[in-house]
Amino acid sequence: MHDAEAQHLYNKGVYYLSQGKSLPALSCFEHALRKENSPSIWSYFALCIAKERGQVRKAMLLCKDAIEREPDNSVHYLNLGRIYLLTHKKQEAITVFREGLTHETNEQIINELNNIVPRKSPLIPFLHRDNPINKYLGIFLGKLRLR
Image (cartoon, rainbow, N blue to C red):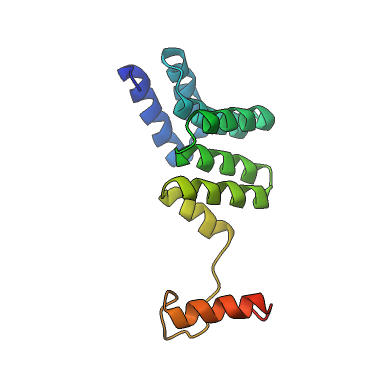
């Protein structure tokens, strides 16, 4: 972002969202949009209007537009996935989150996925889940639909 005030409002809005306060975040993003037209601001603004105003369809369009403008920014995928979760579209959210991870590693997306799809315990509990024995045994049994 080029405008310092827009950057400040953006950071403040992201902070409010991290605290679960989407109404003050919405106000911050609205003011930031008056200063600068940025896909990042639009993406977070979209999440806020979905939460606070129930404008889900508009929010999805805004996030998809942000993704088109900045396809490598995983935050846009995070926000779109969260909007899908608000509408109880779990499978679409998982798809969007995974697509976002193909562009860059984002801990928030990983946390969202872990909350949605808890991992099964390792087949051999005394080995770490990344151990090749556990990994490939799990894949093999999954293909056979035994796990």
